[in-house]
Length: 340
Image (tube, rainbow, N blue to C red; front, side):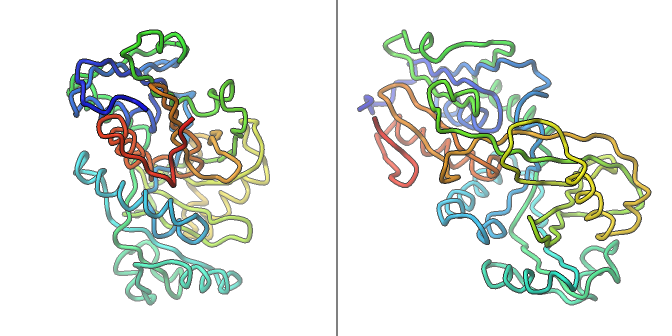
């Protein structure tokens, strides 16, 4: 068991500056620990899974397919996002469907909570661009979204402001950092941690970034789909992210089938997307354990935080709180933590 008396002078080294590692670094630095965040990539973070994420903060929608632990962590994380980054957009999210997916839409409504059903007129009032497009929708008012490529630099700035140090292009090994007997090492490397966690696998999420000024949306729109829910997420500068698939594959390309489905979904949400300019195709590999649930592993002063799957931005703040509570008070969350 790790010494639970708070020691702000004990160094805390965190490996991986993506969404999991960034939240760990921020909360530990704010708590008075001497934090160094190591990232093997450069400051642009283009090789990180977080670079290709949707950034949806949607615990109620995720309850349709995710385990209750995801909802619990997600709801707590919403509070942390609001506290630490109060400008985070919490405009809610919408779920819509075409007539052929009506049964899936009704099932989604039964499986989720904290939504209200909008008729066509109410939907048009909320999102004028969708006027006449759908006969109704589910509106989840408490949900939010962030733009990963903008919010990660904000988190990094907050870490530095709290006294933490970030070292980019720093490819370090957890074992080397742990040689200091007083050091705490938190490994947030995602799939790169398979050298120590071979059960991890990559789940590919593909996305397309498009640009148009012909459509205005204030919140993410999920469209029911036979294989997976597809969504259109508004970003700044007239950009929209189309995502995201969940494919059991570890290549990093975007298939023709996925591209057609993503672009087709956008077109059916609004025909003006057919004239949009394609800015970027890409995909990221989400780290997942066999049960698709997150795990905090404890081995003395070595801690691993991994397996966030497709819920990284949703649950990372709550996982950081749990890690900090363990280090400072010895508090164990039995649903998430495993002690060696």
